[in-house]
Image (cartoon, rainbow, N blue to C red):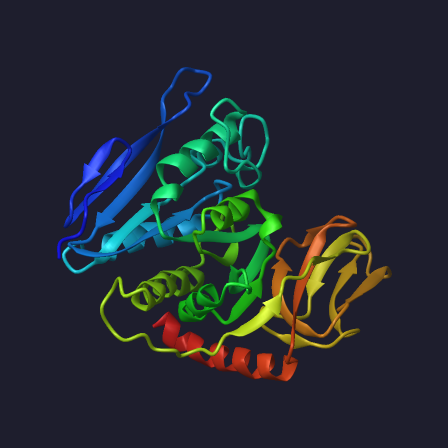
Length: 338
């Protein structure tokens, strides 16, 4: 059976076609036009429609690279279903860094959008109507914020059993539960009954090859799970499930010296870093973990202001099991890097 024609951006993408399109966006104040790049691979064979997108804030370069590599790799001849790849959802944020939008309103808080709203809401409305409503599954690619490096992990709604299976197929070492209400994008996807996975790894404004490769292979694994790609899915990593935790705030200002690494298991009260006066070694503040768990985020900036987020520790139902699995993943990393 032949796949159906996929309609997007006023264009018809026929079965077996692979195209790059430009979705018109609101003009800039200079009257210069702006477009969102949309890459579509419409497989020859019928199957699910998968949306993969990055750069919701405009600074997640790992996601940009993953999307472009995925598009280059996929063949419409062998694909079952359709892949819609958006390397940069927030084109304004990418081209006007560090501003995320003309009004400063984050795109993640602007869904499902408003055709007559502020700039971010208008972009969100276009994206929701033209793309999101036309797919069956969705994968968002994120990084940590600027100077905040994240351990590769997948966020999903644990209440959705089929979504948990897709999260396992991604083969990231950690799967983190996320509340739908934490993002209007997640709320919108939920209301449309579109399963949403969020892959987060690395940090903003940086390329991290390990994070890119894990994400690239993870999406392909999910596509195999959805029968969009042929081939057996190998489970090399038994992912651990975590509750999402807040970042630990710095108790004082100073130069941060980190004593732990990403993926390291720690105990409550254990020393994980220290803050020192840049002009003297006499004043040192010891930073201790506030719970048992695993380090999943670290602020890589050496200069820290009091109250700034510095470490993120995830807790698990079985910390011993989590420690063993993360050690297993660390041993696999040389294989991943080859």
